[in-house]
Length: 295
Image (cartoon, rainbow, N blue to C red; front, side, top):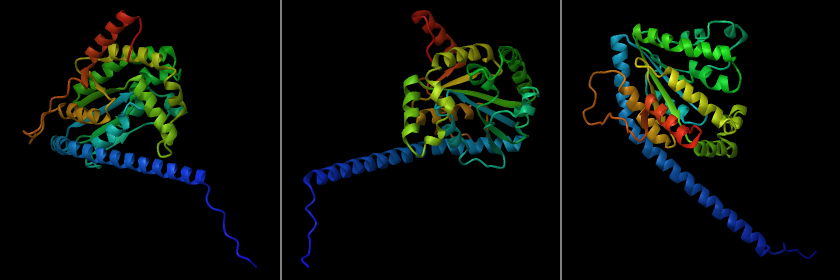
């Protein structure tokens, strides 16, 4: 029986395989460059993470309590900032709290009750990945609370926080502010990246459509709850690395501690960090100029 030889590979097939190989090489190069940038960024954060350890040791030595709130829209960079802040801290005295939807029993309780249950003891720091301010934005935008519950929250939260601070708790309130375009880009990355797809929720899918609603409630939240004892600090978070670095600076500036490095500049970048009062003024000016709020 005569041997049969396979037909030669068609030129079109070779071209397609070659083009796919080029795409694969390009993708690997982008991933390598992204990894290199991430490693460089982590190196930049390292001195500040050392300072956070000094701060934590100070809290433990003085038996002080600290709470840091991380608020902002979905995909604003809160989670990544929290991971960098907590990465090297002593887990016995540092907790990250991200509460899910309240149970039926919790909905029947005093609103702040389930948050108070997570408050730090002496020597502890608690980082809230979203906090009681859920009621001021997410719950109100999506009608998870009533208008009366929303009004009661705004009336009561400032007194709640003043009492918390009066009794010795250090409270830092961070709001991560991302632009609409950057949020859309991050959502698209979540949608197309199998490793990030789990982050994309039904709420996320509606966030862009409800952008103006969120902005209006953001304005009211900042206007009503930015107080001298418990001010808001706005972190511009389009650049995640700069947002993380400056969030660390704000946290480190919340209280004095021993052996603070003399070689580091602890002043937050004014292009990245603004006060809650300044953000309210900027939003109000933009509304007068254009007839609508911006973020």
